[in-house]
Image 1 (cartoon, helix red, strand yellow):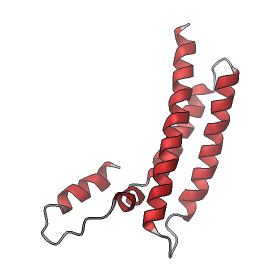
Image 2 (cartoon, rainbow, N blue to C red):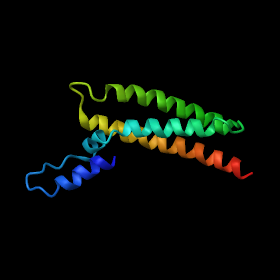
Image 3 (cartoon, one colour):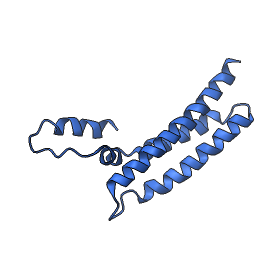
Length: 114
């Protein structure tokens, strides 16, 4: 995400720079890859924890996010794809991933504190 943000900020210094929209920037930032990493990390973190219903639920959500995001990432760079729609989808998926991975991390840390 940082290289995309850096390119945008440095491009703003140029007089002929065309400011892309938020969704186009999100599409260029490869947020699908970020989401996959967060979901996979949450799954690994919860692997050797005591199983609870809540942790099982969020584990399933993380697996679904990982599978869905892998599919979307595979088609994101195809010819004729609308960058703004890809960016919108990646922001939605990132939001869902932040909730599911964050909740998984919270439950794992809460168990570790016991």
